[in-house]
Image (cartoon, rainbow, N blue to C red; front, side, top):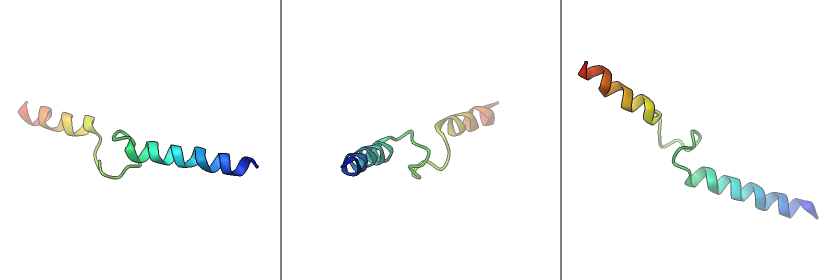
Length: 45
């Protein structure tokens, strides 16, 4: 049965997304680090 193997692969992918801090779908980072980094640089000028 290939379905159980497919489920395992999906679960692994989901775990990677949940543990990946750079994942845009994580939801804890509303703004990407580049945007946060660029804002203070613009204010300093």
